Length: 97
Image (cartoon, rainbow, N blue to C red; front, side, top):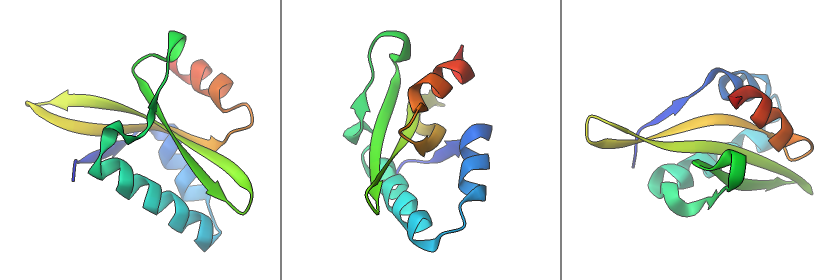
């Protein structure tokens, strides 16, 4: 498994989650991303270099946005942001730019 780091927006979002089932869904998603960081879909245009991974829970679509970074000749997965798909990419662009 690859090491993982969380940027502040992702940390804040994960800390706010109260529902155990949703926490478990995100935990499984992060575990899968750590095993194979290229599993997510690469974004294009303004968001090139960002990968998105879909999480579905109780009929609601969520997204995890992350980067694959190199540190000391090793790959590190950096989770940039997570949340519901509604307005997700607009919020992500505001954070990054």
